[in-house]
Figure 1 (cartoon, rainbow, N blue to C red):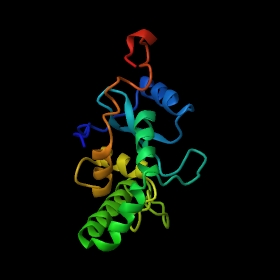
Figure 2: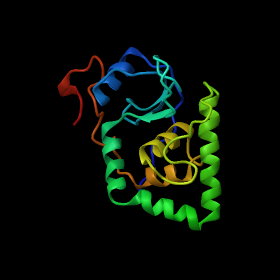
Figure 3: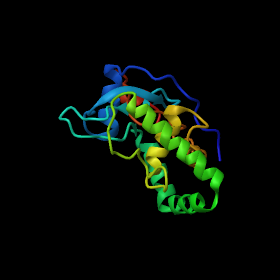
Figure 4: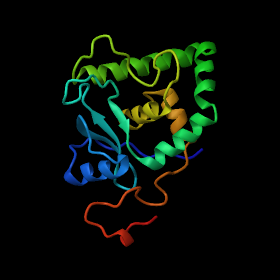
Length: 180
């Protein structure tokens, strides 16, 4: 385990952030509201999205992980059965289950502060199971440590995905200026 990246302030997206998002996900952002967390390399790694996309489609995933290196490392955790183990612990550890329910309530409150999506779940399987570690890690990065216990656990299991430099070429930088 390593020390997770420090919290960063929520910021308005810049043109460079939008370009980084396009490079990270291979498409333009939809419903982008803010940069919820920045990787230690300076690029966005979690964005805050609107509860409804511009066409009106509900999109309950408020915190969306965009860094492909972080997403790949999380995919490895998922493939190694971490979600199943965490879900099982929720059924046998009442303190963990209560803390995870609070994480769910925090997620809903943050989304509802933007727009209420009546009848939609939070995300990632909260509050009763673990369905997507990407969402839980995104929530932990955006909200800061201590809000989502399972997101914090998964985050602590990840390698330092930023150690090799930015996952995308920063806007305006030459390709050879970026560490790979």
